[in-house]
Amino acid sequence: MSECCGPGQPCCGGVPAAVYDYGPTPYTVGQVDTFAGPVPQVATQLSPADARGAVRVRMGIARNDFRVRPGLYAVGRPDDSSQVLVTANYKLSFDTVRSQLDGRDLWLLVLDTNGINVWCAAGKGTFSTSEIVDRVRDVRLEQVVSHTRLVVPQLGATGVAAHEVRAATGFSVVWGPVRADDLPAFLDAGMKATSQMRRVEFPLRERAKLVGVELSVLWRRRTLVVAAVLLLILAATWKLAPALVAPLLTTILVAVLAAVAGAAVAPLLLPWLPGRAFSLKGAVAGLLVITPAYYFVFGVGSVPLWGWGLLAIGVAATSYLAMNFTGSSTYTSPSGVEWEMRRAIPLQALGAVAGVALAIFALVRG
Amino acid sequence: MAGLRYIEEVVTLALDAKLCNGCRQCTMVCPHAVFELVEGRARIADKGACMECGACSRNCAPGAITLKPGVGCAAAIINGWITGGEPSCDC
Image (cartoon, rainbow over all chains, first blue to last red; front, top):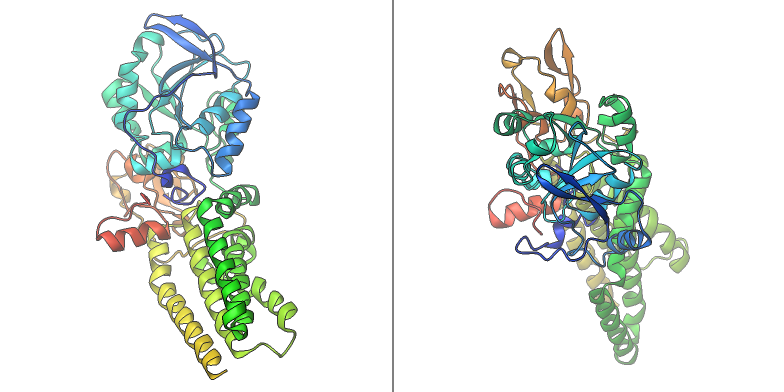
């Protein structure tokens, strides 16, 4: 289970799991009466407010309150023969699902995953067999529909055992497509998924979205504080030790470039960077980004000795940052990541320590 | 997937074909098409593509599939090293 750890996914945000006030539900537009009582009906067109919310999440603002009240919802005017689609109460997932169902009559069973997306919640055990079983009983689903099928997103399978759901509730699980965009085609084909609908990919578009979230860290308060402190140190250095201004400016440059290389360039160029280990891809991305900058700052053949030290630190940092992107990727196994880390971390540490030693040595010697 | 493949040799996935009942769940839940069905029994077709998410083993009623499931995430593994427990992305 990958993808959950990255900053692109909300499970790292420390979402409180306790009592939660879901607030108003602007996504409901009416209600449908059933034998189990009235069921809220959801809009299948997203509102400007929904779109704004999505942008805020991608920018790293508003995250904790981005959840939907769990329970049963109606799409269109469903009846007892309509299909039941299961999803998570992460608002972005919920919005994507309902916007794909325009013009259809279906039931939507929203599980309480603490506002976390399906795949991630399945890995963490909140999108689970027991949550489905409890929710099916809670909404008295057997009184709402006369069939015994639940369409569960395939990525929920990490946390949901179809045979256990069936044993506990009588409902059998039909695995839906990986992507909500494929729901219309899946439903039109009589709930048959093509092999393409079952595959998880990691295309440039997906990686670019995650990079946006990674870079949103740049306008967080902590980053701005660090920048202000650096400016003060720089000003003091200018007065007290003018010889150190150039190394300090270069250090800041290398730090920014390493962050951009590790958090943006490496993820974007992932398929084209050499090797399979993310740490190796990251080291190459670091060289690709920092070396041209050195060319402009120092020119060819005139990089000072401390500059080589800073380069080593920058490449080590980029490698480490890129290695952490394994958590946002969709294809790295934990065994593989651990294998990579046991080899890469000592090398990264060696590079950083050697770089620091070289830079200090060069500056002390003058 | 567009040439994106990870370190393959260390994947912990294993299948005991004798226990397989041919229910096809593994071929449906796997996000990387690791399994195929041959003559009514599951077979590992592409072990190197496995990301150890554990969807197949959880949905294998006869328990024919074994692996060490978890999060393929460096931060989670570091957390596990620090706390001495299981890797966790509760960062």
